[in-house]
Length: 639
Image (cartoon, rainbow, N blue to C red; front, side, top):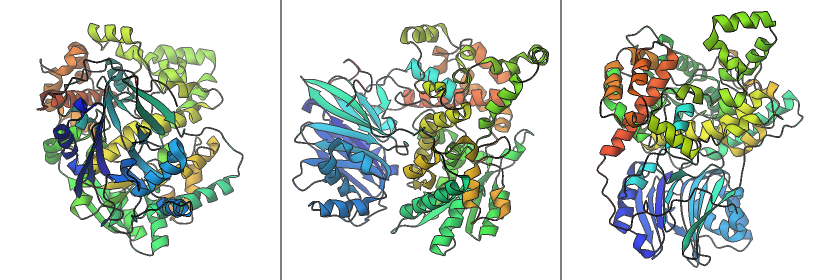
C-alpha cells in the first residue's frame, strides 16, 4: 500500500514545494520510497510501502513511450494473469510487479480497464496524448481517494489532510455535517469540508480541460449487485468455500511477513483455519483488550482476549495479545481521532489503532482481517429488526394502542418507513431528532441547501425485502465510508497493509446473489458462511455469537473520560457552538444511556477533529486561490 497525491491544471497551479509537503505528510503510508513526476500541467507525488516486487516496483510508472503515467495505492491480485494476457497481445512489460500492468491494461482497454482488475486500488493515470487524467477507486472502496477542485485546477490525495496543506482552510459543509449526525460518518461523495470530495467506490473520474475550464465527469464501472438467483444452500455454501479459499490464496504475500487480526469469532477463525490447511503452518494471530473500566456499564465489552485465546489454542496459532491501560488510551486519544483523517464516530478505531501498532512493532507488514463478512452475510443483530416490526404489526390493535401509550418513544419507530428510520448499523439520529439540536444558522443553511442523503434511496427498493435493503445499504455506504475508511487509516498509520478476503469482489457478487434465508433468520446469522466453514472449524467456534472489537465506551464516558469530554463540548470556544445549541449538548451529557453515549461520542469526535484542523499550522498557498473560483459539484456529468 502507498500514499498518492497530485495536482492538475495550468502551470500557475503546479506548486512543487506544496506537492512535496503533501507527499511527506503521508510518510506513514509509505516509509520505503518517495518519488515525483512533474510536468507543466501535472504533478504526481508518491510514498511507497514495498510489499510486491520489493526491489523493483518503484512509482511513478509509465508505458514504453512515456505517453501514460501512473501512480497507485493498493494491490492488484490478478496481475500475473493480466501480465501474461498483455504480453500475448504484444505488450512489452519490464517490471515483475503489479503497477506496470495498469498502464498497458489502459492501452488495451481504455476507460474499461478498471473492470479487469481484481484487487483494492486508488489509481491516478495521465494520458499525455488525450490530455486527460483518470482517478479510480476500487469497487468496494477499500482504498480512499479524495479530490479538491474548482473550475481551473484539481488536487487529489489518499488522505483528506494532505489536501489541506498549503491551501486556504475550507468552509464546513453543512449538508455533510447533517449527514454525519445521522450516519456517524459522511457518505461519499461529500466530506465535512466544502469543495473536497471522496471518489465513490467503483467509480472513475475523468478530468479534462474544455474551452479553458476544468471538466470532471464520472463513470461507474461496478455496482453492488442486488439480483437474486435460485441455488440450493448446499451449493451456495460450497461456492462460498471455494471462492473464499481462492480470495485468501491470491492475497497471501510472497515477500513480506503477514499475520491475522483475531477476535476468536467465526470470520477470523475461518480465515485462519483455511490458511493452515493451505500452507501447513501455524498462523500468527494478534488480539487486543483494555483494562476493566471503573464504571459497571460495559463490563462485557472491554476485552475479547479470553475468547481469542481459547480459539487460538484450539486452532494452534502463534498467538500474541496485549492489554491497553486506560491511561494510554487517554494519552493517545487525540492522535487516534486526527489520524482517522475524517470525523468517523466509530469507537472501534481505538482498539484497531493499538492493534495495528502492536502488530507493526513485531515486524508485520501485512495483516488479514475478517472485515466485510457481517455486511455480506448478515452478521449484525440489527438485521433482525424488520421481523420484529412485522410481529408488532400482527398484534391486535388494542394491544398496540396500550404499548404506544405506555412506551411512546420506543414504539415511535414502528410507524416509520425503513428509509425514515434506518441510517446504517451505526445510525444515530433521524432529522426530526436533530432539529431540536441545531442552531438557527444550521437550520437556515440546511433549508437553503436542501439536506440530501445520497444512499437512502437504497432503502426504498420494494423489490427487495427490508432486510435485503438494509444489507444493500450497509454494503454500499456503511462499509466503505465507515468500516473501510477506519481500517485503512488505522493500519496505514503504522505502515501496515490490511487485506480483506471477504471483500474479494467475486465473493461479494456471489454472496449478494443469495436469498435472505441463506444469510439471516430469526434464529441464526451468517447461515451460509457457517456451513461453508463447518468442515474447517470445531463446533464451538462455528456457533460463537458475533463479537467485534471491544470498546467500553459507555463506561469511559460515564467515568474516566467524562471530565475531558465535558470540558471539550462545553468550552465557550467550541466549534460546534456555531451549528448546535449548547443547552441541548448539556442535556445529552446529563443523560445516562448507551444511546446518549453514542451521540456524545459523535459530537466529541467532530469537535476534536474540527479544532485540530482549525489550529493546525497550514500555510496559506501563495498560488491563485481555488476557493475564490466556482466549485462545481462532483460528477458534473457521466461518461
